[in-house]
Amino acid sequence: MSTDPAASAEAVVDQPLRVQFEAFLDEHRGALDRCLDGLTEEQARRSLVSSRTTLLGLVKHAAFVEKVWFDEAVTCRPRAEIGIPATPDESFVLDDADTIATVRRAHRAACEASRRATSSLGLDDLVHGNRRGPLPLRWVYLHVLRELARHCGHADILREQLLDE
Image (cartoon, rainbow, N blue to C red):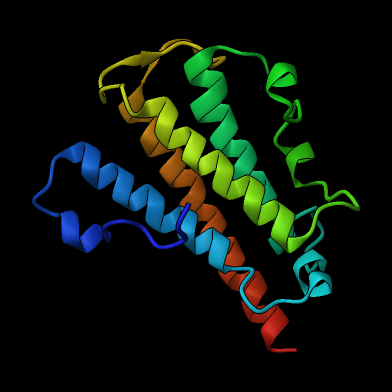
C-alpha cells in the first residue's frame, strides 16, 4: 500500500460515491501510517494516556479494524481463524516483536486485503459476518471511516505531545 491515496478527497468530488468513499478511507489510512514517521521505537510505544493507546498501538488496532470489517464481515470467517484478537481492546496490546516496521507492514497489508475483499462488491451489497447482522457495504465504509477519523485525531494529539517534549 502506498501511504499516499491514489486520489485525494478533494479530487473526487465529481466521481461516483464508491470512489469518494475509497478516497476518504485511503486518506485516513495514510494519515495513521504517517503518524509513525520519524519516531523512535520508544516514542512509538510510549504511553501518554491511562488507556492502552500508543501511536504504535493505534496503527496495530487500525489493522485489526480492517480485518474485522473487511475480512470477518465480508468472508464470515471467525476472528480466531483470521488470527486477530477477540476484542478491540486486545488489539492495542504490543508484543516484543511489534516494531514500527512490522506494524506498518501489517497495517498496509490489511488495507490492501480490504481493497481486494471489497473490489467486487457494490455499496448496496450486504456483508453477513458482523454480529449486528447483514449490513450494506456503504454502512461498513462509513463506520470504518468514522473509526479511522477518531483514531487520526488521537494520533495527532499523541504525536504532538511526543514531539513537544
